Length: 198
Ligand SMILES: Cc1cc2nc3c(=O)[nH]c(=O)nc-3n(C[C@H](O)[C@H](O)[C@H](O)COP(=O)(O)OP(=O)(O)OC[C@H]3O[C@@H](n4cnc5c(N)ncnc54)[C@H](O)[C@@H]3O)c2cc1C
Image (cartoon, rainbow, N blue to C red; front, side, top):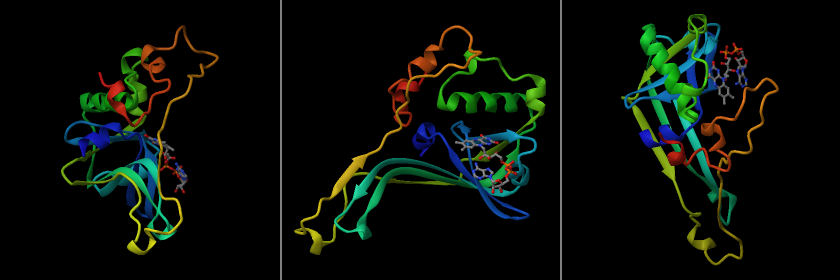
């Protein structure tokens, strides 16, 4: 399960607010036992999440599965659902550590960027979610056709789907040189993370 969370990039975070349920996509970071989420102080979802039960779902779609009937179409995927009580992070060291985890989760760039200033940190809310209660589902391979469709003359199989990174596009105000960490991504699949480790 941790492996899926390590290679995922976006969590869909669900919270029951005073106005009803709300699910928003968010970047996250993890340790072996905690998921961290962050947002602006004004962020209504994280504001409502503190000390409440929330749910975070991470999904990686690995392929489209075509059966001989749409009834049996599917997708290949790796998915994790985490549920638990959201804890507002107030300890300054934990906030900073969590921001580094979230920054480095997708691409380790913390050490080649300006670190958050005290006012950046004051403007940020960080919420922690224990990984005690989580489940994973994984689907791989081709379609499962009904027995009566086996000899039907329709194609069936699957098409792999990846998330490959393209050429970096520099800002007008970019400093000299694209960081190696970013350059190394070109052509890589963000969800096959071994090349990003370390
Ligand atoms: C890939 C990805 C990663 C993101 N990572 C983060 C993150 O780490 N931290 C963070 O704070 N934000 C992140 N966002 C933005 C986040 O989804 C919210 O839009 C943002 O946090 C504002 O939330 P809010 O509760 O203040 O929304 P409000 O501005 O209060 O939302 C008002 C209404 O706008 C609509 N709305 C808000 N956000 C979205 C959305 N993303 N898509 C469609 N409708 C929306 C909803 O109907 C919502 O009820 C990310 C978005 C994406 C797509």
